[in-house]
Length: 62
Length: 276
Image 1 (cartoon, rainbow over the protein chains, first blue to last red):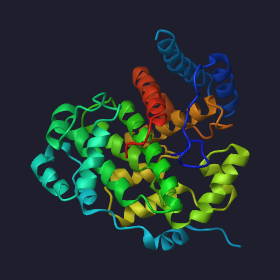
Image 2 (cartoon, chains in turn yellow, red):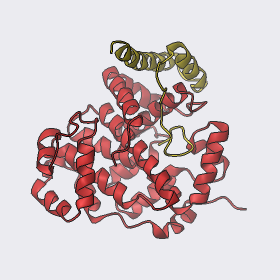
Image 3 (cartoon, each protein chain N blue to C red):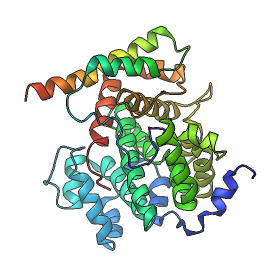
Image 4 (cartoon, rainbow over the protein chains, first blue to last red):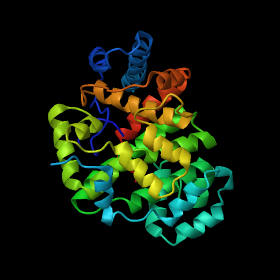
């Protein structure tokens, strides 16, 4: 319950359509806490890419 | 003006109803093997609105059974007794703690996020079985303090919302800046007052900053929260992910498939309409 938002009603992670993986990864990379171990940072970024990328592919494949 | 304390929030909660008797019963006995469907059905039968909510959740895309579940018995058959028990708990809590008027809109959003977190926690705990349903309940209720502030001090909640919108920061950071107590502390006080089981009280109290000896449930809720914040940052809704407890994250990353499923389930849950 520590998600974004301002209003509890806000939608977490709604990207409204196509996912720009490079942009998403860049945002997340900038937003991770300083001092986070490199392997954990890499794992989170890979996880984000895998999850969002999978969603994208599903969309692409109809 | 002095900072608002947890006690101030609790004192403002005159309108917050007692936790429903049904919820107390379900929480008092967290062993899902003891669920008695006929007893539950009898209790729920007296509350058609609650039955309707339970069936709506059972028919939601979470379970992939849209439109197929038309009775509690069918729900028990297709989603299992353990899951049905969690669904009843979620529906009962949301009905009792929804608020009214302007507060209702905010609490609706709260329950949507709570259900998403619950689904995420369940995935991190393996997706099925008793431990997964424990995790579902902890995810559902871990933000109880935030709901309490929303219902008891709507002006302060509105101030937090405005602050979050202006700074694109998370709720807890905004509350700290505005000298309001952390929602985990408010939630802990409420959970103790309502005699929640100790494991659930710990999950509510400690998930934001798990101690070194944190139990698995606390770590699961923390990581579900981390995933939600990462997702919000990736979506551009939040600037910074904020605190991550490395031991908890390492533990969850030892099961990457669960992490992946948790992230996906959170996203799908957050983008769908509220079923509570």
